[in-house]
Image (tube, rainbow, N blue to C red; front, side, top):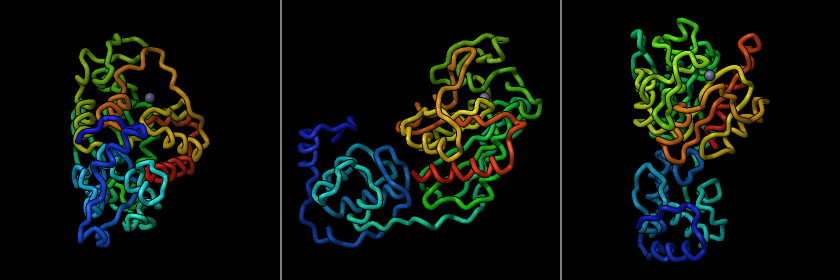
Length: 330
Ligand SMILES: [Zn+2]
C-alpha cells in the first residue's frame, strides 16, 4: 500500500485503517522488547522507528512497511489507527502518551556522555585540507548535523561545534559535527573558498549563475563544482540528517527554513535572537540549507546568523550549544 499524502482526510484514513486493522495474534499483547529515544513522526529516521514498526506489527497492524529505520506513510496510518482505537488524538505522532499506550519504553533522560565515537574525513578542500565530521551520541538514532563554518570569515560557529564536543548528547541522537566545510577560507579569512567561490551559492538545489565579483558571491561555473560542496552534499546524501544547523555571521537572526518550523522557533527563543530571512545582495540561490532540505525529505535545516565576532562571547556560544541539544530532541 502506497500512500503519498500526509494530510489524510477522515474518509481516506478510515479506508486506509481498514487495511491495517489488528488481527488476533497470540503475540499481539507481548511486551515491546525495545525502546525509543525521541518523539517519532513521519519522516523520522532513527533506530526507534524499527522498534515502533515491530511493535505495530506484533499488535496486528500488518499494513506497516518495515520494520526499517524510516517512518513512512504506512506507519503513520497504522499509528493513527492505533491512536483511534486507544482513544488518543490520532495525529500519527509517537510522543510519550502513544509510546506508553503501545507499551514502548521511552529512553529519555539518559544522555550519552561526551565522547567522539568516530572521526571521518568526508572530503578535501581545494588546497588539500581535510573536511572532518565528528560523530557523538547514539549511532542509528535520529541523525543530526551541525556545521560550524561555511563562509570562512564567519568562523564563530566553530566555537559552538567545539563546545558541543564537551557536552553529553541527548538520548537517541546520532550527532555529526562538521567544524568547517571551508577550511581554506578560514585560513585566508575570506568568505569564499580558495577558488573564490561562495560555497553557499554553489550547492546544486536551486543553483543559478552568479558572476565573479558580484558582491563576493560567485556561484562557481556549475552546480556543486567545488570539492567542499561535493563533500558535504555526498555526506548529507549518505547520513540523511533529520535536522541540520548551519552557522553564519553576523545578521543576528534565525531562519525558519525546513519542514518543522517549531525547531528554529524554539532555538530562537532559547538564544534570544529573532526569526526572519537573511538579506542577500545577490540571489540566495544554491544554498546548503536548500540542498539539505531538498535532499532529505521532511528534514529541517536552518541557519543561525550569530552576532558579529566582536560581540560573541564564550557564554553566548555555550548558550547556543545548549540550544542545539535542546531542539534536536523535538
Ligand atoms: Zn554566511
